[in-house]
Amino acid sequence: MKQPMIALFVAGLLSGHVLANGPDSKRPGWSGEISLNGFAIHQRSQFNTHDENAVTEDLNNSGKTTDDTEIAPLGRLQYTLPSGQTQFFIGQSQDQVAEGQLQAELGVTQVFPALGELTLAYFPKLPGLNETWEDPFLTGVARQTTDVTTHGGRLAFTASAIPLTLRYGFVDYQLDGEDLSGQSLMLSDAQRQQLQRESRFRQGSAELLMPVNRVLSLVPRLIYTERNADGAANDFTALGYQLGINLNYHRHGFYTTFQYSDEDYDGINPVFGKKRDTTRLNATLVYVYQGLLGNENLGLNVLGGLEKSNSDIKFYETDSHFISAGISYRF
Image 1: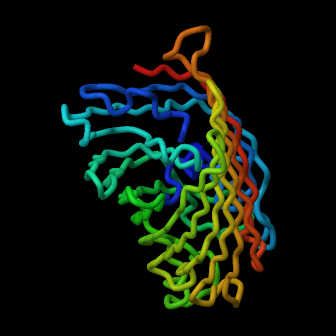
Image 2: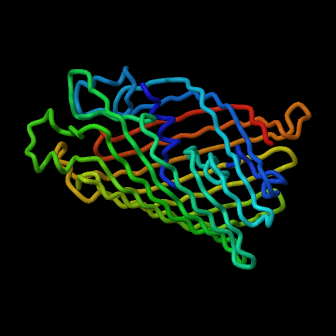
Image 3: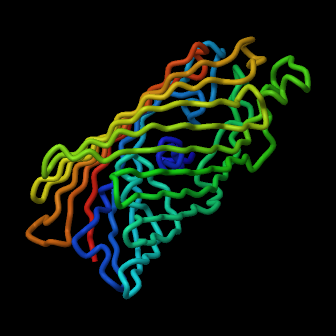
């Protein structure tokens, strides 16, 4: 069984400080950071592929509650050209981890003097890291899993003249096996087609960095997300609002984000006879202490995250959270 909660945050949509920007993060040559983290995961979702959630007796509930633990590495390796204006990287990016988005990526950051900073990144297909049910609507017997493959990329531009960052990202979501959604029900071929889940996600956002004083800053963000699925019942557009709170004091760093979004679905779900209307709340907290045991390169990090969604179709409601702690080493 693969950990779907880890996958949620590893493949979380596009858009930290666990892999924080040190004073030499743009020094020419090689640099990086590695962290080993343990996760405690609690979740309730019909799409959680835990063995204890394999059987659902009916479609009027949101699944069984499960608890798990997992160990996962985080890391980033980067190379900066002698000019200090071009940096290539692989691993998790600093601006992703604080939002609970832990996917590894390949990318480049380019500084344009007097204009701003541009980042281009791509995360490749990594098969076998995530899975879902072949037919999530099967009742009374154990549901079978199929692997999910995702890949995507992102672009971010931070202006020099004003503290504005614009972001765009995409994700392609594919099932490795056949999507059997609704096959166990008495649905027509056209109705089963409406339930197909393979999708293309796109997301754009704009954020402002608003310093309050030397240690505290606020980062409001407006987010637009679009899902174009093979089945119309899974198509949606969403408008989200996020507030980041960043606090840096000596060796301590606290980074918190709160996000609310409202998903508006396009098509009627033939299983339940109506469109979905879902609201989603996410929150993450990251704490970093640098200089552990008197070593400037050694750090302690603690992460926590939760996601709760409410829907007029109870089958799609979710409630998940995790906590993680680890030791990092910067080089």
